[in-house]
Image (tube, rainbow, N blue to C red):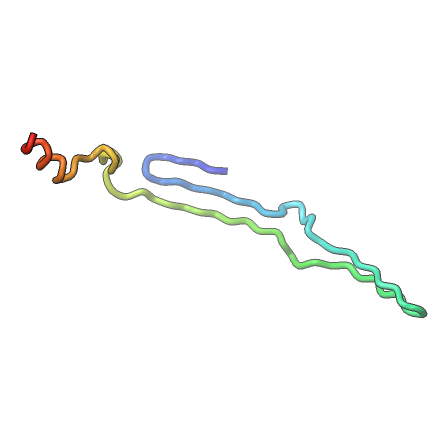
Length: 76
């Protein structure tokens, strides 16, 4: 989920919220059976908050004229 207002952005991220990351294992040898199950807690919730600084109406770099364009225009 993401919410923006003015210069601020807030994000909330959830991973494995239903705790579905677990494992089961069975190993059999003659006269021995091993059964195991488990898993680490893989549930995560992350919250991000960011703020944009500076002017928002700055021209794109690709639209700017550099010094070489001025020199080229004077020569022509």
